[in-house]
Length: 275
Image (cartoon, rainbow, N blue to C red):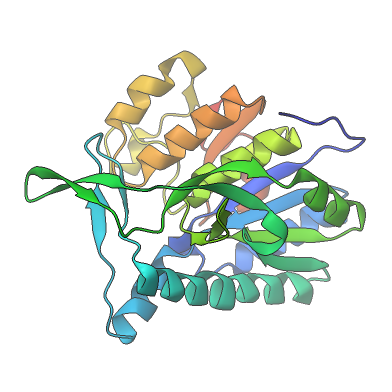
């Protein structure tokens, strides 16, 4: 459900692998906010979680669904490590840098105030050693409800929300959710004009990892085919783009977080534009 409001919002998702050096991203965000743009920032924390999990003696494991989507195996200990890495470390680093540029940023997890809510999956199917196996002790799910009232209250107060997983289940448990898809749900719920998915590649590549094979425009009608062809994490970004457009978002740009002004350039259409 989309909501009308006097000002427009863009939702910007920063990929976890480039969150280790968010300086250019934060400077660009501050400049845009200074010109009156309204932004909600979403980030993951994959690299931080992997490093912390290794240091704490509980290395990350990944599983692949029968449809080819790869996700983090999230037992309770992994969930706790993810919370430390995403909310406790990366989120606060981004908030600190934004505050340094004069932005009134507020860091929140999807649990806070029930910003992101969804059903915890009772069981997930994964391909392990060539066989489809049912995993039952996983704390994963997908965002199906967004607390728009809370986000609009923060935006109305001149604050810039910086959101990270986990979300909260309808049973009150933390759940690991895909940050790209959570950003898509957030954009749809806010009636955002733009959803920008920024990562460490120029956009959707026809011949991954050849960066010269960038697909700069993708008609909505070709999203399903593009998702099948996408590699690794890009599958989730294309799925998120599709869900955002279905939810009423007018334009999705898969852009490059490594650029000098990554948000501004994505807003100008640098990357893969889907609308």
